Amino acid sequence: MLKKKNLEIKENFEKDKKKEIFDFETNLKFGIKMEIDDVVKLTAEFVAVNGEEFLNKICFLKKNDPLFFFLKPNHELFQYFTVLVDSYIFLKDFKNIDFEKLNDFSKDRDSIVKFCEKKFEVQKIFQKKKKN
Image (cartoon, rainbow, N blue to C red; front, side, top):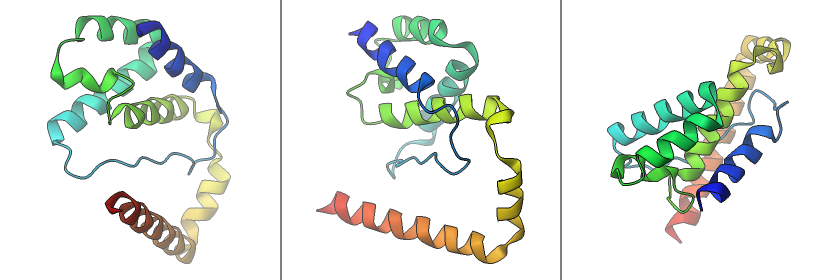
């Protein structure tokens, strides 16, 4: 089971290293406790920096700790965790970021507002689907 989970996370590490700056999305469930969110984010950051060996160690050491149940693939926060790891790895390597595109985007206020409106609409649709 642990090998399967590690293989899945390793595949996520290798997949799509050249992502666009706006490719990362998380569908974080509302109502998550701040403490758990902090643990997920910090763990993802450490995994991004220290790699698979760190992930293996923390999975083994914290397998019975409810704060770290998100490391199990069947947990509802596992996907959120893997997206964070991917985004931290991406940000760690600045040559992947298209700063020219980001700079152009940031200068045009209308495009920022349109982008935010689009994200809001997507979130509304996502919430409606969750309710149904």
